[in-house]
Length: 360
Image (tube, rainbow, N blue to C red; front, side, top):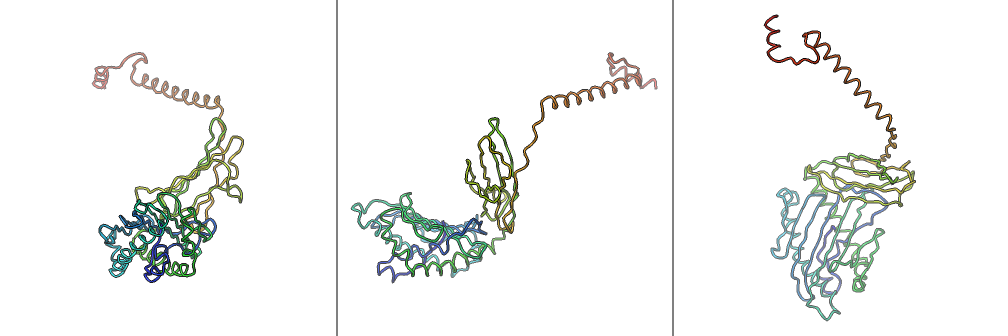
């Protein structure tokens, strides 16, 4: 879901895959670790083996939309004026020209994809998703995925190897795994993913905010236990939540997680819940949260199981409160009777009260 490309016309003439995937990844994600910030790009192409009908690109840094481009206007649009000022006119013009050149690259991809297809005039939808996330150890992690007509085509896995899911993808393997492409990706990542991201973040005016974490324990009537861990109010959006027991990450149980969702104030929210079967307690379970503003991973234990109060204890407590209130009310009424001379059972009308006032 994030990255870019670089134009190499001479290589395309020799039959290589052109700049379409120069942008694909630099280093794989290593271990369980939340990123500082996230840079995402999505390319969407619609065309045949003979023509490119539509081509769009959207670009995000965290929750900030940076660029939008479509084939119809052939113009790279910065979503905010400050983005153009921060990156500079020359960069905008350079990137726009690359996008125009890359229309040819995507068309080359479609032709190669459909070279053995007798229905070359059939519309094909190609999507390229790229996500780059600078990690705490200064490396850059990437997720790269190519899809054709909504089906996985190929992607770069967590250890930096390409996985190919369609037979047609095998023909692109030599290009994707070549040293030339590896060097081009590294060069691109330094210029765009890391450098441009830093520029956007420096000028965005957004301040990092740590998450406010809440851990809840709930036991259902059937004995099923649900543990919920929610983090809210944090920025940037990259965060990692997971459950562990002791030093072991919990892989058992029924687990669910919300996506990272935006709050109204521009911060983010995420929740992870695990359901334990009857007989399994939540003892020693902990929610681990990793976010840039926490410095290191923070551990939030499950609160102690609340003690069940007996029904008769609750009943006696309520009865005692009722008796106390009634006693106070009776004492108040008797006091009024002594001071005014009215009987408890008599009604003091406004006329009676006025006569008392006149007499005194």
